[in-house]
Image (cartoon, rainbow, N blue to C red; front, side, top):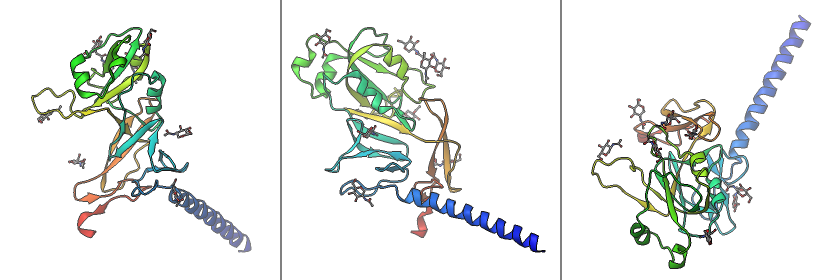
Length: 251
Ligand SMILES: *[C@@H]1O[C@H](CO)[C@@H](O)[C@H](O)[C@H]1NC(C)=O
Ligand SMILES: *[C@@H]1O[C@H](CO)[C@@H](O)[C@H](O)[C@H]1NC(C)=O
Ligand SMILES: *[C@@H]1O[C@H](CO)[C@@H](O)[C@H](O)[C@H]1NC(C)=O
Ligand SMILES: *[C@@H]1O[C@H](CO)[C@@H](O)[C@H](O)[C@H]1NC(C)=O
Ligand SMILES: *[C@@H]1O[C@H](CO)[C@@H](O)[C@H](O)[C@H]1NC(C)=O
Ligand SMILES: *[C@@H]1O[C@H](CO)[C@@H](O)[C@H](O)[C@H]1NC(C)=O
Ligand SMILES: *[C@@H]1O[C@H](CO)[C@@H](O)[C@H](O)[C@H]1NC(C)=O
Ligand SMILES: *[C@@H]1O[C@H](CO)[C@@H](O)[C@H](O)[C@H]1NC(C)=O
């Protein structure tokens, strides 16, 4: 009997320990700092400290950045980043837009300069560039402008290695359009000097039962990833580790 009791106590202790470590894990999520300056809190999994699912940088004056680029907006499936037209920005800065949790989608046209080789599916009408970009005259001299567009419609993300293969010196800007491949005559909205990044969390789906899970194969490391979206009639981030989904009429 005594031996059994000891076992019971041991099991209880183990359970206790498990419970404790689980609650510390939860506390860790809560320590993710989701506010930057005077902004309203960013939704899970975004935040500004090391224990956030997707960490963005927050400057002392409240600017939010990925690399050197300002974040304009985060949505349920994308991060919108500003890419001011600039002719002397080194091409390697483009790599700052790729991480293990986000990457540029195929809904962007990338403008590059001084490339050693291009085999582009995209041509740059100089007049359009002059019209859309705030782009100084001296920039246009002595360097040719090229663009890259993901023409393989099975890909949801830009193929970085193809663009890297162009051997470009400068990353000039980007135009983002949700319906770039849709030439059905519908109005195409263009966001000039903007790039759209798709985001995901690593691993298998861990969404609320009231959310849909979108499985994503990371274009960076080919590992599985996912994103949650609350079903119609619900609001929230949709993630089990986040706030999940709340029925709209319960708010
Ligand atoms: C979160 O970070 C901001 C700026 O980085 C800071 O002002 C704020 O105090 C932090 N909040 C918490 C709860 O640590
Ligand atoms: C944030 O800044 C740090 C230090 O400059 C850098 O190492 C990190 O890559 C940056 N993260 C993002 C998302 O830009
Ligand atoms: C995409 O463009 C490249 C380069 O112009 C071309 O070689 C390739 O066949 C195109 N692919 C598709 C699917 O159109
Ligand atoms: C492009 O390359 C040429 C020759 O290497 C150089 O003279 C020019 O300044 C470069 N242009 C830009 C915008 O970097
Ligand atoms: C498009 O991309 C897919 C996946 O990366 C690949 O299997 C396919 O061969 C590509 N198609 C073309 C025409 O390059
Ligand atoms: C293209 O746009 C039309 C009209 O807005 C829409 O009905 C159609 O679903 C779109 N196709 C794709 C592939 O997005
Ligand atoms: C990018 O394109 C290259 C060459 O077409 C292909 O081998 C590679 O698998 C593609 N990468 C991704 C992430 O689609
Ligand atoms: C969730 O998935 C269901 C079934 O596939 C679909 O009918 C519904 O439109 C999806 N909802 C959202 C918000 O994506």
